[in-house]
Image (cartoon, rainbow, N blue to C red):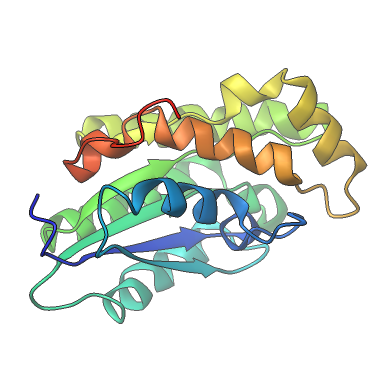
Length: 204
């Protein structure tokens, strides 16, 4: 991709998109952006976070909010960072799956390339069993459409750093190391391939 073309990425999701709980204020989005800028100097990233949102709310706003940031001439892209709000609103896995499918289908219809992060694990074992169901369902929806899906649940479920941070936080959010883990997963699970550029920093 030409470095002269502005790449605009709307990152839509919950409080993890905003980086809440990170003492450095970067979250995973800031860390990924910093790593990507040397490869895409004209990159513009817009984190669009809403707390305690389920998939119905996400579907209602994603394309509309993202479109406000897109440009006519640039390369417009969407990152969908899924959470576990459906567990709190009582929305079924089937309905949540349909909501996510509708978002991805609308993005495809508008020719907006999309990258999806699955919901990460939490501190509660029962919720994690239910998050595992959401994760499997969301993954299937994305992969059926040829869309990159980053499974954050499986690698972080038993990770001691992640579990320690979400267990010790008042809001059960990760801190600096946890957000670093999320950023690492994004960067090493297809991010640069999706953008069509090389990671010029390599393993630095």
